Amino acid sequence: MKNEQYNRRAFLTKSAKLMGVAGVLLAGGSLISCEESMYKSYVVDKSKCTSCNRCNYVCRYGAVSLVQVYNTEGTEIISSSAYVDQKLCYKCGKCIDVCPEKAISFI
Ligand code: SF4
Ligand code: SF4
Image 1 (tube, rainbow, N blue to C red):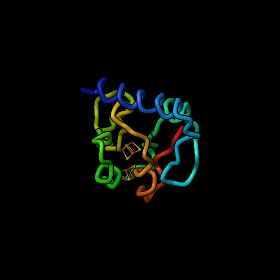
Image 2 (image 1 turned 90 degrees about the vertical axis):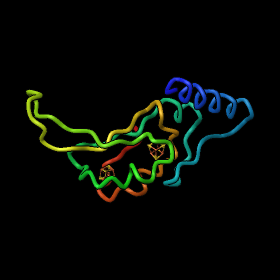
Image 3 (image 1 turned 45 degrees about the vertical axis):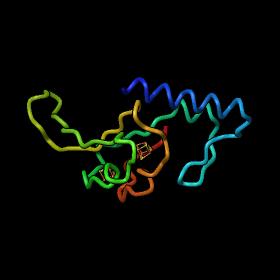
C-alpha cells in the first residue's frame, strides 16, 4: 500500500512534467520544480516540536504521526515528536502552515 501510494505520487509528478506543468505551488506560496517536489522532504525538528498534534490533524494523507523520542542510550523515553512518513506525504505543505513552532521544514 505504501509503495503503491509512493508510485502514484511519482507517476503524477512525471505526468505533470510531461504536460508542461511549470512546478508545484506550495501552501506557503513558493513555487518549486516538479523534480524538487519529488526529492525534497518535509522534516520535523524534534527540538522545536511540542507534540501539539496540529500537523497530524491537518494531514489528509495520514503521513504524520507522533513518535516517542528516546535518550541517546535508547533506554528512556524523553519526549515525543511529530514524524512525517515520506512515502505517504503528498507535499501539500499544510503541516508547515499550521505548526505554531515552525518545527517543520521542506529540505
Ligand atoms: S506536506 Fe501535506 S501530505 Fe505531507 S505531511 Fe504535511 S500535510 Fe501531510
Ligand atoms: S504542529 Fe509543529 S509543534 Fe505541533 S506536533 Fe506538528 S511539528 Fe510538532
